[in-house]
Image 1 (cartoon, rainbow, N blue to C red):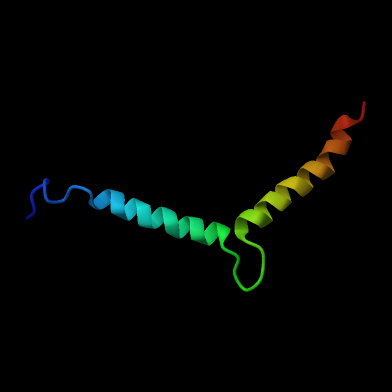
Image 2: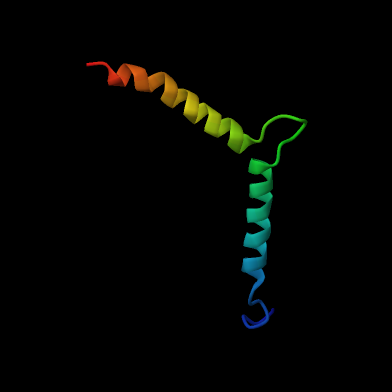
Length: 58
């Protein structure tokens, strides 16, 4: 069994790799399509554009 001193820093490497993998999955476009983050932002923009008019009515 390893002592805690020799295991120091392993979690930070794992979290860094997981973070980069998630960022790549969200922001890199695949198959010539838009990235997931871009599609999400467009969906939010469309929702706001479609719901702001009824909210502005008296």
